[in-house]
Amino acid sequence: MSELKEQLKSQIIEQLNLEDLTPADIKNDSPLFGDEGLGLDSIDALEFIVLLDSFYGIKIEDPAAAREIFHSVDSMADFIESKK
Amino acid sequence: MYYIHKIASITHQDSFNQTDVNDSLVEITEDAVLISPDYKKYILPASLRRLSPILRMAVAAAKECQEAITIPFEAISVGTALGCLTDTEKFLNVINTVEGEILSPTAFIQSTHNTISGLISLELKNHSYNMTHTQNNLSLEMALIDSMLCCDEGKDFVLLGVADEAIDFLNKLKPIVLPENSIVTSGTTFFALSKKKSKSEIGFKACRSIIKAKDIEVDIDLFLRELKIEINEIDRIYTNQNSLDYPKEMVVNYEAYSGLYFTANAFGVHLAHDWLIKEAKKYALIVNSGCNNSLGLILLKNDKA
View 1 (cartoon, each protein chain N blue to C red):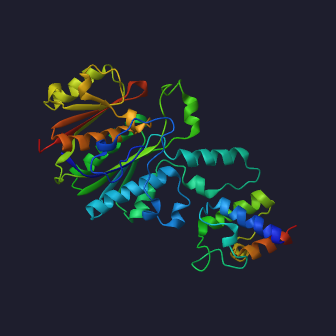
View 2: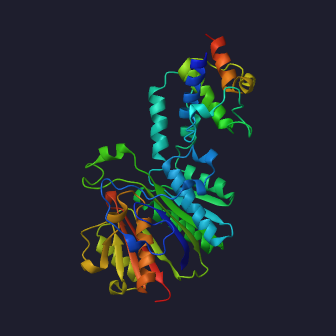
View 3: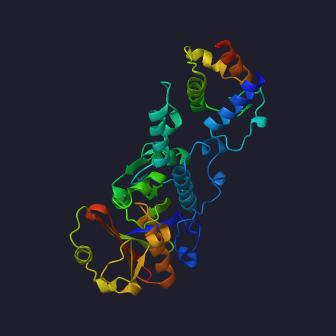
C-alpha cells in the first residue's frame, strides 16, 4: 500500500507539472484541493480522472464520488485498492 | 501615427526591459538559449506550472506593457503563425498513443492559437476586444492593421503582440519548407500602442501586407510612393532577406539576431525602434518576406527627427 502511495505521488507530480514539489512534500492524509493542501483546482480533477484511467484502468462512474476519492493520496490509494 | 509606448521582447537577445536592445546584440548560434525573465514575478505558481513556453513568454511581455501604461488596454490584438505548438504536439501524441478513452484536458485547452490572447485577457483581467490573427509570416502585419483600426475607432491604448514557438518537428521541414541553414526558434514581442504621443515619439506610420509579391523592391517603391516618401529618405531597412538591392550599410538582417520564427519581424521592429531613438533618425522600414512570395512592409517614423 505504501508503495502504491509513493507511486501515486510521483504520478501526480508528473501529470500536474508540480515542478517545485517532490513526493516527500505531499503528505498521505493532506487535502489535495483547496487552500489547505496543494491548492489543486477543477482542471487538476480532470487530470486525476485521466491518471486513474491510463495508469490503473479505473473509470470514475459516479462524478459525485470524485470529491471523496480525490481528497488525499490516502483516499485515492484506498479507492485503487478497492478496485483490484 | 500609432505611437509605441512600450516594447517588451523575449528572444535570444537581452531584449526584455532594456533601454536599447542594440547595445548587446550577438548573432544567434545553434546552441543559443532564450533569455527569459523570472516568470514567477509575472504568473502565479498555480498557473505557471500548466503553461508552455509560448504562453509564459507572451503573458510576461503583455504584463510588462500593461505595467508601463497603467490604464487598462481597450483592445488586445495578437498575431501568431503556428500558435501553441508544444501543447498541440503533446495533445496529438496523446491521441495517437493513449489506450484509454479519456484525453488529458490541459494540452487540449491550450493547443489552440487563440489561447495566447485569451490567457492574456484572463491574466490582465481585461474583457475588452480580443482578437487572434494567424496568417503565417504576415501575422504581425494583420494584428498591427487590426490594432491601427482599433485606435482609429477611438480606443485609447491597444495591446499588440506576437508569439511563436519552435518544436523539434519544425527542423524536419528543412529544406523543403524552411531554409536549410536557418535556426528555428521561439520568440515574442508585445507593444503598447496609442494615437497619443509617446515619450520617444516613435510609432507605426503605415503597414502593408501583400499575399503575392512580384518584386520586393518594386513593391517597396509603390508602398513608399503612396506615402509620398522616397527610398532615399529611409534611414535603415530591417529585413529577413539577404538579397535586397540596397546599400549594405542601410540593411540589417534581424533574423541573424532573432533566429527564425514566423513573427520574428516584430523583433525587427524592436531593433528599429531602439535604433531610431539612439541615432535620432526619421524612418526605418521593416521588410518581411516569406514563403509563397508573401511580403510584409512596416514603416516606423520618429517625429522628433
